[in-house]
Length: 247
Image (cartoon, rainbow, N blue to C red; front, side, top):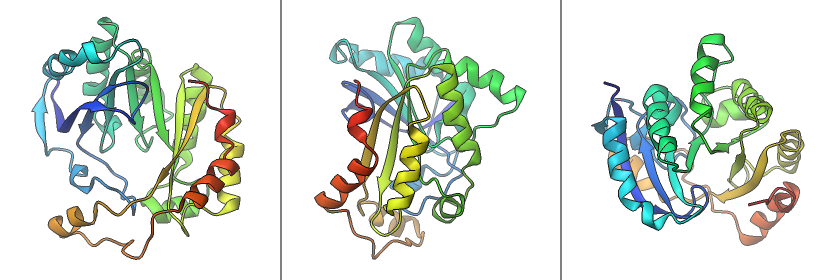
């Protein structure tokens, strides 16, 4: 039996995909994004052990709230670290005509035959991918997350080639992820992807600081500020978000 490790469940999510969502936060993440707001999800084996069938039985209770455009979103942590569990869960959802959304940063993606075979099976049961593009510049991405981004960009291109709908997301941290050249390069990359249905700018916030303090983890952005409305508007303009808003 495949067992997954679940951090928490959210019954009425309104921001992680279309409509009302049952949001599953899985354990495990290799990245160490400096603005991560869920550091308690980093450890893979923590959380609640659960089978795909058990998880689906919890989710389907809320089906009446989903109407025609809601469904299930799996986030993290990084859900792709639990690929087999995720795939089996999505396949059960798909068998019951439930819309499935994957919220990922793409770090585990590998362009190898072995990985792509599993990846394609997952995509067959995935309705939408919410892809967090942290940074385009490779060095800046490494400094921000502790990991390279080449495979993440390859994943985005692969999703486009396979015809999988995507929402692209960018966390906006003033003085860190909002440089004009970086945002323009992000836009130029996004416009090469033919299945992008939405681009979202997510304002940085410091609400996770107490979590870091409780876990005894140093927080490196103590002086960072949330973006102003004007800074958000400027980023949205550079990214041409209105050009992609199709649903």
